[in-house]
Image (tube, rainbow, N blue to C red):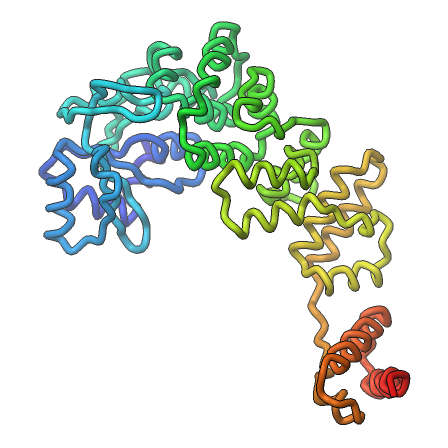
Amino acid sequence: MKKINELIKLPEVRTIFDLFNNQGIYLVGGCIRDTLSGKEVTDIDFAVDIDPEEVVKILTNNNIKFYDIGINYGTVTAVIDSKNVEITSLREDIETDGRHAKVKYTSDIKADSLRRDFTINAIYANRDGELFDFHNGLEDIENRRLKFIGSASDRVKEDYLRILRYFRFYADFSNFDIDADLKKVFKEGSQNLSKISKERIWTELKKIINHNNSFKSLSMMNEANILTEISDDISVTKDYLKISHIENKINKPINNLLKLSILLESSEHNANNFIEQFPISNEEADNLRTFTNLDLSIKSYLSIKESRAKLYRLGVEKFQDFVILNWIKDSNQKNDLNWHTLHEVAKNFEQPKFSFGANDIIRMGIEEGPLVGKILSELEEWWIDSDFIDDEYSIFERLKAICLSYK
């Protein structure tokens, strides 16, 4: 297939095929799925017919940087031209507990395929572009259908995180209704999500939220009582439904944490609970709290002057985020054009430069100290409210008046 041949031509892919030329080695999983689906490939995974210790030896002998943090599970991550490539020994499960699996290595790629989750993730390709598809994954990709390999109940019991993985892929492969039996599997299995680390759950939840069709997946998760097993504070409301409408209008994805804040009902209390429950970074936590403290002064009818002042104070990215948040909350669809215009205005905003500093205040006879900063802030606020007046004489006259008021 032409698409697969293009994948094989990638430098990091060619390098690994060349290094392991004498072993049975195959591209597998997401890179095949995404290539055949016409999506950008972000992760490269290989399956190889040698033990991980031998993988390490080959990489070491060829001066290839690697990480072996996953070696106990058969995975070594090579770094090729600053890109991570996972190389996993062919294996089959001999024991599972819903979180991790004990494995034994094999030379049989069909046996390896049986331990994978979905048919669309169990397609292999050798360096000649020949595909090995033991579970009709190609047909399921073409028909946009998501199917477990074998018994859904068995696959979920092997690793309960597969419930979340299912709904991550469901956003792309959902040309069908989830039947009652599968919903039952999810409802029963989701009660065991507490066995899964919060790190793994947060990683998958972020990927679901990141998808432009996340409302569909999250709604189905809500229907199957999965979201309540993750967090009592998450709720899929009509506000969240509006996100995809806005993304289509602005032609770009909306910030993940902004979307999460809507799932948390724009509640600072819910956000703090979520931050305590999940290992999100300090930066993510700060942003989430910011999004739950809505700046209600941003209205759909802001003038250009008012918009420029807001842009200067907030910065372009934060201004656009607050526009989107207020847009989501606005029930009047007639205001869509105004909100869209505000979002577009920000794209062309160039931050004006305030050229006065502390020394200018001191030269006016003000002693060094807190008053200097206070006067400078007052002058800058006047300059902003004057729509960034580009007249040094007028600014200087205003400075004189402010300084005199403090003498």
